[in-house]
Length: 419
Length: 178
Image (cartoon, rainbow over all chains, first blue to last red; front, side):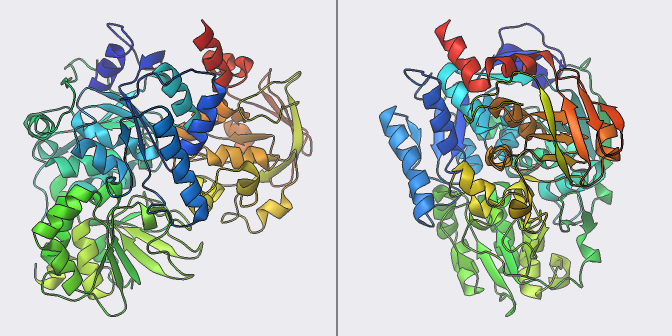
C-alpha cells in the first residue's frame, strides 16, 4: 500500500484499502475558517446532534477576512466565536492569537504525522508535508464530521513524483510544485494522491515541503503527501501536542503514474495569468511590469520565506512604481521576524508589513488590485479576479523572485541584483 | 424536477430536468463561479446576485430559473467554498453538466443536492442556448434543439444513497439515530 492508503486504512479499522474503494473514516482533526464555518455551523445544527464529537478536535480559525474587514465579515466571525463558546471548543483562535490556518496548525503541533485531517478549505492538503492524510472538503462535510467524527472518502489512486539532481540557486519548493503543475495541468492529478519523493525532497526543509503539498489542489489533487523522515521527525517532535505515527509506502505500492524530474533543469518558475499551470521561466518574463508584490499566504508566509525575501531586499528599496506587502502567516512568525530584524529590513525598503491574514490572496482585503493592475505574489492562485478587479492580473512565484521583482519594478530574478 | 427549497434536501418525484443551457469552457474555477469578494456572507440570495459575473458579463440578470449550465473539464476547480454550488442552486440553475468536476465541488454538489452529470459527449456537442432534457435515472442527456442524445457517466452507488437520503445532513441525521 501507499502511505495514503495506509493512513486511510488505519482510520477505517481495516488492514487494507484499495484505490476506488468507498470508505467511512475516522477523522483526527476538522478545521474551518470564517468563510466556510458559518455554513458548517448552520448545517451542523440541522443534523440534530446534541454535541460535537470531540471538543478538542475541531479547529475554527478566522483568518480570511480578519481582522474583520467590514460588518458582514464581523458577523461571520461572531458565528465562529459564539459556536466555539457554546460547545466549549478548545481550538478556536481569536485575532491576536490566530494565524493563517495552514501555517498555524503544523507550527503549533496541532496536526501531526499519521493524522487524517479534513478542512473546509482547499489548502488543507498542506499537512501532507508532515506525512498526514489531509484534504479539503465542503462546509456540509465539516458539519457532518463535527457531529459524527467521520467522513466519507473514495480511496484515491496515487501518483508518484520523484525529484532528483541539483537544485539551481534560489529554486525551492515553490518552483518545484509550479513546474509540476505546469507539467501535468490544473486537473493533472484530479481525484488523486500526489506523493512527492526522491533525493531532492529528502533534502528539502519542512517549509519547502509544506509549500509543495499546499499546492497539490492546484493540480486537482485530493492530497499531497511526503513520507516522513529525519526532517519530519525533527519538526514534529519539537511541537506535537498528540502522539504521532510515521507511515511509509511499501516497495510494492501501486502508482497509477510515476513522473521524474531532473531538478537541474527546473528554473525559477512563474505562473502567468490565469491558471497556476500557465508556467514560464522567470527569465522569459522580464518585460512584465508590476504594480504590487505580495509575500505571504498559507503557501509562502513562513519564517524561512520571509528570511529569503529579506535577504534580497536588504539595503535596497522597493521600486517607486511598486507596492510591496509582506504578511507573516502567524503571530509566532511575526514575532520571530521582529527579533531577527526582518521587519526592519522590509520597512526600511519601504514595504508594508501586515498582521497575519489571508487578505489579498483571495481578493479579500489588505491589498486589492485596481482594473488593469498586475501583481506578483507568493500565493497559490491566479484565477481571473483572484486579487481584485476582474481585469487585474496575478503572477505566482517564490519569495526570492517576488522580492527581486519588487526592487526591479518588473518580473526579475535575484541574479539580476548580483545575488 | 421537484426540489424542496431547503439546501440540505434533494428530493424528487421524477428526475427529468429540462431547460435552456449556458455554455462555459474548461477549468471554470470557484472564483469565477462566485468571487471571494462576496464571501463575507453566506446568504444564498446574495450569492446568487453575483453568480459567474466575472466569467460572463451580467450573468445574474440573464440567467433564468430552470436553466442548466454545461461546461468543459474540471468545473469548480480551486477553493472548497460551498458557496459556489449554493449560488448556482439559488440562482435557479437546475443542474450542471461537465466533462469532469473538481473533486471538492463534486462532493459539495452531492452533499447539498445540486444535480451534476459528467459527460464528454454532452460537453462537446451541446452549444450555447440549446434546449436540453436530462433523464437523471437513466443517465441520458437529450439535446432537443439538435435532436441528439448523449450518455452521462453513472452516478456511483454511494452518491445515490446520499441522494435518496436527501443530502448529507439528512444522511447524517439517520446515522445519528442508529
